[in-house]
Amino acid sequence: SDGLTAYRQLPLVVVLPETVAQVSRVLKYCNDRNIRVVPRGSGTSLSGGALPLEDAVLLVMSRFNRILAIDYPNRIVVAQPGVTNLGITNAVEQDGFYYA
Image 1 (cartoon, rainbow, N blue to C red):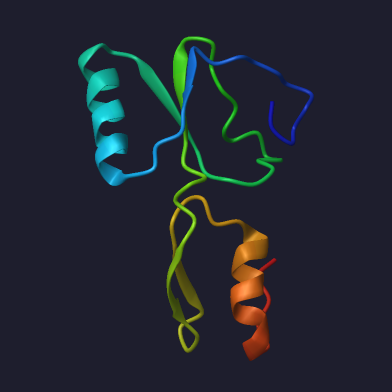
Image 2: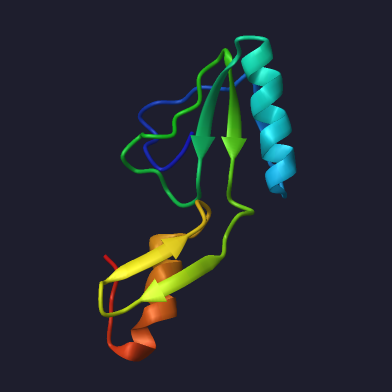
């Protein structure tokens, strides 16, 4: 389960890729076999948006955890899916910003 512990489900399998090529191979494999995929970034997932399915691959993207760009004038952060809200806050707080 994730942070929303009211719902629990074991996935078919959990995959923790480290490279874009690995993500691509997993998605191609699943697509070719009509296997569902549930992507999961990082963090609590208190909204329940990344709950696994018993017949799906849980694609955990937590190893993709880099902030790629911060654009302060436009209030934009470009981040990989494994970056947490706290990670963004830590990256911008020295400039007086906070990401809720």
